[in-house]
Length: 382
Image (cartoon, rainbow, N blue to C red; front, side):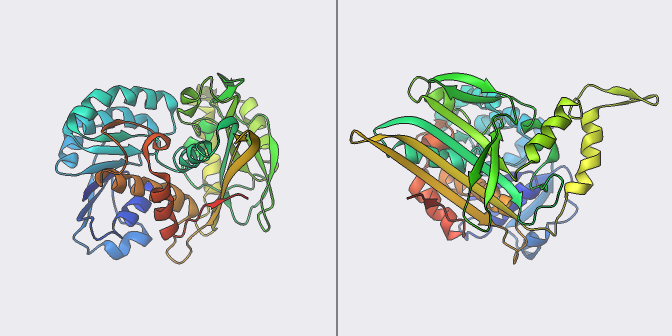
């Protein structure tokens, strides 16, 4: 296998690290606009001829084509809004593609690549991280265990193991991405039909076993991927909520309503400043805590009937940072998920050529076994 990883940030580097664990992977091109040095956990591969860091401007179509030349799969860990044209290039070149996604409208555009992907004999798989990604694969697995499904509820959160007030939060991915999720309406199924919910709304307590304890859940966008379309008219209630420590959502909602996340520039002492840019510049150093270990909490609950009787199926994960290697839990559950999906693509274990989301084509048993082999263990709820 020869792989191209686009984006050498946290998730891209974690995906590259995971790929390099497999001797069958003969080359990993890790591309970013600027790569000054490999992240510490990748440093041991600096002399490995398989690891090939490279400078790449993903907005340069010719350079992207050169970077994709000769690889089996391209994995995207760049911002979601770049994935449309990049996946189109992969389809044109006959290169498998998977990305972290997170934006339903872009996924819908990527579906239009299906005729090209089928003709080239490759798969285009958007939304292949944690949420969307892992959580959707679990939801689909749970749905298939019941005869009829009434509700499907997904909960995921990346959290500090040692929360510090007032936000009890630390960055586990882009702050810009966090604010996108806190401002974008969320798609749900209500009475079997698509509807939207305001981000940060309908907060509710969700309890995990000690020492994690009580969290709060609230609506955010992207986590359902396109499942709300697939199960329109078939499942009464379907929703995705983000998990945080109690009190976080109320503070972020207040900041949003006061305009701190707005993108329209304001005049500040003669300078044009977007409130969101100022907020990010203010919060970024306070929420960036590389020495503070994180965790990922996930729960899927599907209710309906089996054999004519009420039934419930669920899955749960509480994963913690790999402190030995310095790899966060968010990187393990997101970057590793992307890597596993890409390897399954190249092995032709994700179904027929075309465009699909992971819940539609990734073999759950194989995928979960691969995660467990990496210490990311999902358990089925009793």
